[in-house]
Length: 203
Image (cartoon, rainbow, N blue to C red; front, side, top):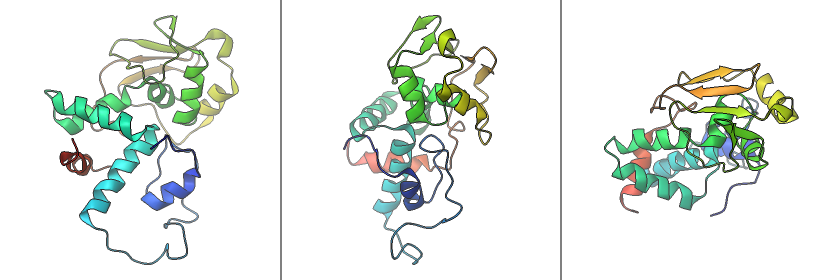
């Protein structure tokens, strides 16, 4: 399945959660699933519950199913708990770090900023959104693009704070990863164990 490009609020309503990386908009006006029977009570199967948690991750971080499957395989090979490692790998993606630092309103906006060559790591340009930032590395926006509308809009978003593992200097548009993210880093409710169970019979 390709990367999702459809209505963002609609998919958040369907999943029953606001995904800050997918959209800065809220579902509070219609906090129920879309469609004619959206407000009807439904009992979900165990598979549906696991799929929903997997979709939260995939859509928030803007991944394809293949990309998420690859990360899950890597997480399972780690010495850490698979769920903890998966969250770490997702949060360390360069497009996510740009978003969590506040330099873009959403992860798709951050991905565009990276792909267009406006982001530096240690002073060197990196244009790969999936680049994995390491502890100690400094991510910054190119000086010529510090007042880019994407960056200004990101800094104006007031509903998200930078995580504890990022030291952010908004004036110079720089962020340093002071430590690796852990399972508490994710900015929306998620049951990681259900994702592990979803892939347990598929990997």
